[in-house]
Every structure is written in C-alpha cells, then in structure tokens.
Length: 151
Ligand code: ADP
Ligand code: MG
Image 1: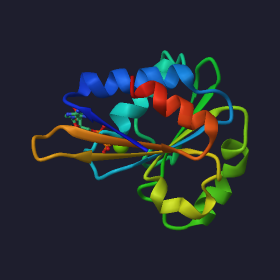
Image 2: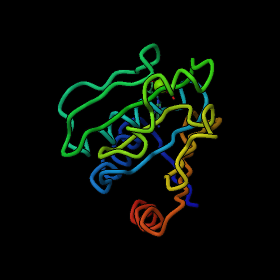
Image 3: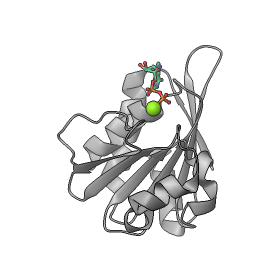
Image 4: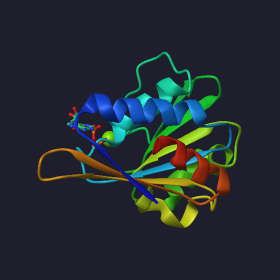
C-alpha cells in the first residue's frame, strides 16, 4: 500500500493520467472515498491516460458509461445502487471480466462482486483540503504500477 498526497486537482490529474497509461485490458480499478473526495476527477484523468478523448461524466443514474480509448473504458458509479440485481441486469460480469478497463466509483457498495484481481484506491480529504490517495493492488502487476506511481 502506498499513500500519495495530492495538493490540488491538477496533481490528482497527473496521478490519474499516469495510472491510465499503465493500465491494460481486464484491469479493474476500485475507487472509494466520500462525496467530493475526487473519485470522478481521478477517473477522468485515468480515462485520458487510457486514450479517451470524450468528456467523462458521472454515471450516477445510468450506473455505467462506456468510452472508447486504446481499450474500452467502463466507468461505473454505484453510489445509488439498491441491490446487486441491478448490476446483474446490466450483465456486469461481461464488463468486470471483459476486454476493457473498469473504473468503479463507490466500489465498497458492491464488494461481494469485485473481482479478486483489482487495484483499490481510497481517497480522503485532509483538514487542509488536500487529498490523501491510498493505493493497494492485489496482484504483482498492480504492485508494480503502484510502485511506479510512487516515483
Ligand atoms: P467524487 O467523485 O469523489 O464525489 P469529484 O471528483 O466529483 O468527487 O469532486 C472533487 C472535488 O474536489 C472537485 O470539485 C475538485 O475540484 C475538488 N478538489 C480539490 N482539491 C482536489 C484534489 N487535490 N484532488 C481532487 N479533487 C480536488
Ligand atoms: Mg463521483
């Protein structure tokens, strides 16, 4: 696990972009943290790092937005999810175990269906209104990526 401090949205953007450049098809990135922590800000940067040119907006009501980058990018926001059936109706396994990169805001809401191999990111606002970003991967490859972000 590493902890990064982001002092402003631009710094979060740089972290996310760099992360995005290192991701590959099949990767699952889980984002947690309170409202306003910066999950969507980070997602937008990750998506750009993955080559997405379109604007990335929160899929709070749709649950998922899909984008075309160098691989497909599936942006989930499960803040408002009532139960796992809503994800099943979407056919979430096609995404979570598919050919794209999944970025899941509020992943802790659906912990029981998160694939074992994932990168978990927890963003917390500090008293100074900075952001502490904790990253923890469950695979050797994710460990390497996290190390790289620490440089
Ligand atoms: P979430 O998706 O977690 O609810 P958003 O990314 O939508 O959060 O909003 C984060 C807000 O916090 C934005 O208005 C952003 O400009 C602001 N902000 C301030 N400092 C930072 C920082 N260091 N990193 C990310 N966002 C920041
Ligand atoms: Mg958000």
